[in-house]
Picture 1 (cartoon, rainbow, N blue to C red):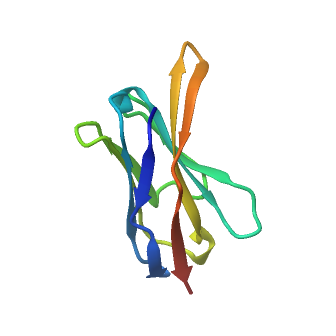
Picture 2 (picture 1 turned 180 degrees about the vertical axis):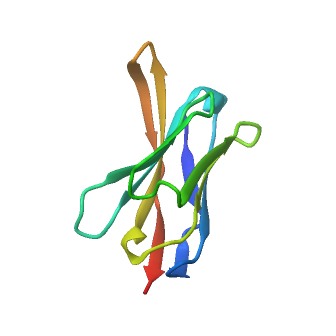
Picture 3 (picture 1 turned 180 degrees about the horizontal axis):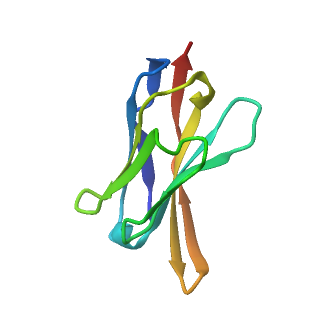
Length: 120
């Protein structure tokens, strides 16, 4: 079993930066595909960024060029560096870990979320 705990959210002005962290328990972190999702008030949860176990990354168009996902397998932690923040980035941000083998998702883990508020 893997537990994910996010931190680093807060209030920031437009154009500012925040770095979110997601610490994972357990011994399989390095083999997980890690994602960040977000959910704004009244909206559906949307995918933000992904990093595979080989550190290949992908981003939603809305954050490409502004957000960077990274991982430190020695610390069992994934990060989301958010720069040039906009009010529309305001949301609860969730960390997600997937254990995928041969295209089959064997396990799906979620954190409790951390709130990001970007003031205009």
